[in-house]
Length: 420
Image (cartoon, rainbow, N blue to C red):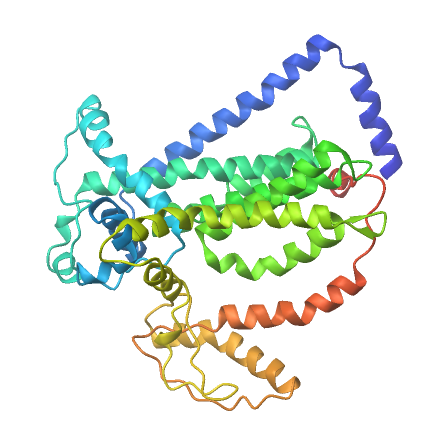
């Protein structure tokens, strides 16, 4: 069936004239544009919907990036009483700053052109949590509309990443392309999380999909050499590095990327290439370092801040080890938490029981004494990163040992057509 389907597709391709081919190329673009218009309208209709505390988190982050100098962004608790402190990497902080700087143009130009006017000037001001709780109306409808609009605009990266993956599965006229593309871009879970609950998961997922799409296109290079082969794999590394600079919890995927790129890209005819490894490490390190440079330079030029203090504060925000108290694990060591969980006791128990159990199991299997007790502070705890990293460390050796050699031919992702 596979041979028949491929031969039929090739015969159909041979019958297409140049004029028909140009028409066929225009149709997918028009279809995609119509889908984008429809999905955007649905997202705009969700502007008045329920929003979680994550809305207040991102509003505060935009406010501090607009109000405070660069070297004070990760010291925002000095200036306002809030629990929504900035705890994402510098790349995401700069992303928030870009949207915050566009807010004034939104108020001064876009709203009057639509016959609307700003009904409050406190949207991107530093506000204490107590004030927002006492007066929820301090967050105006204009502020809600703007922040919702930033999520809608950020979804463009999701569509780019979806196209990168879908285009590796087939041509724009094929069923595999549209199946993959529609399942990603019209996913109801992303619609709920980003445009109701309020997050930027679509944008982050877009960077991840863009990286995966580059790897898939790199696999389709026939010889494992040439400019296209190098460009696709280096672009995948850069895209994943940008993702890490935006959200550090994706570090749990870094070992898989390292193992894959090491075997697929750094070996040439079963011989290791130090040049490829160096070039791969150089582009990755440069991409990761770039968002930190403005903060380090701002601290260097400041009279009240040192580069060491700035870097230490950023790392302590990203990996807040001091938030764990009363922990005994592999000796008396404190472990950090890297995510926020629901406040209810039942949901917190379900959310964290599995990582704790798995971490205990694997640590016992390795011969460590894992009897420990944990007292939660402020309803916040996580063992996710620790457990996930432990999983990947255990599997990495097996993965590298059993990884097949790179094929000389290209990988064909059009198998989805035969399945459907």
